[in-house]
Image (cartoon, rainbow, N blue to C red; front, side):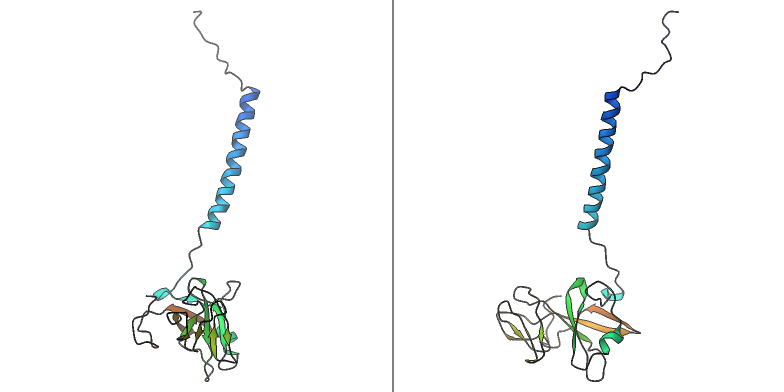
Length: 178
């Protein structure tokens, strides 16, 4: 019965222990970096309501109460973050309500954002000189198309912005962005 093997298990060598610790450290570091990179690259889906409606937000991503914008004088154009974060002008009407049409602040020439000029009563793109009327239609090019519009609704104290899918009231045609 000399063929019996001893029941001792071989001990882990110092080299094997160091290799295991090095591999575990590299795996933990790599996985944490990939997790952070993945969270940065993959956007958090925005909660939308019926018809793709979202809440109007400020520059920090906080919902804007309707009372805040309606406190502005009539004719004011308030800039908010709208659909897909696009800058959108909301218009305060003479009866202290919001217009049902919001105007997206992206030039149809090259996508520049631009300010509303209250003195001239027009949108002026500083990049290439396009001018837009108060309703977003083109006054002077090189912009080929009117500005994109969205639907605006106020429910309680929340401002909802919805995609515009109906006939464009400025042109009487199907919207170019649909």
